[in-house]
Image (cartoon, rainbow, N blue to C red; front, side, top):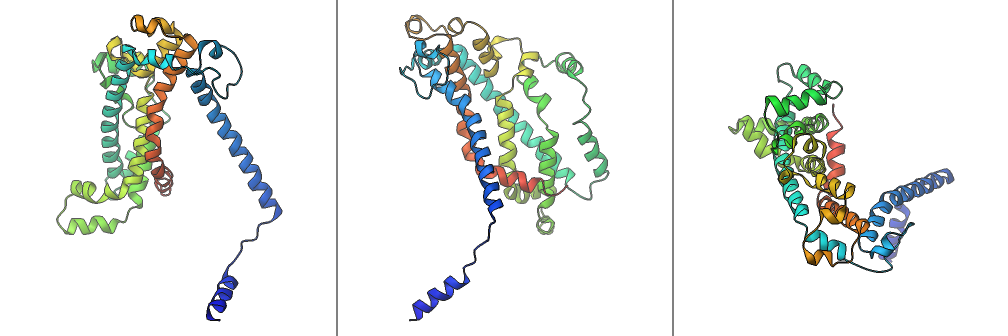
Length: 307
């Protein structure tokens, strides 16, 4: 009897949120819109993937391909044997590593400094930094600075440094630091820690979601780095992957991906080679995203609460 009474009391306390018919209609419309958006995002990528694993005869046909009618991995075999592609991978990984290390360090130091209320002229510095989002020197002055004044042509620094600090990243990180309890810093100071120790040992461990979110943006930006390499790099041995991709897509793919007699005997054509090169360029960044996705929403929301 006591268990039955407890069950009745539990059911009595269960509350149901009333939803009107308009709310159901609204949720249905939102669901349909999200499904359509998902299809528009997934369709181009799936179409390229199916093309890359199809035989040349099927790949050259127009229309949507849900699945390859004749399965073939010859395009991937030829791309894997292409030295130019791996050179682009190597250069891109170097740029990503350098860009992430420099960008995350400078953004953290700048954001933490601007988050301190006792920083002299903090409002002036913040406004000056935000002003650069709307007023920039332009491409020609930047080119002259990088190539002529700093003499960084044909170096990885020419790709990394011009975009190492993003104002949006800096503001998000600054707002995140401002949301952290100031009592933690005061307690660390009382224990004898200096400002750098407080940042490294107290603030950064509490800022993992924000750092992961900004790191994802930095990695994607440097992985897709294209324009700076096009401007400042003329040495083909230092071309990043996106430049290699551009050459493969705009020129004769078979000529770009020649890898000996074994490659010439494979059943490939321009369409499948281009599709395979696109897949090989996008798969690594897609594999990285799931590990950082859980921090993404939290980092953006918390970093945008306080101005």
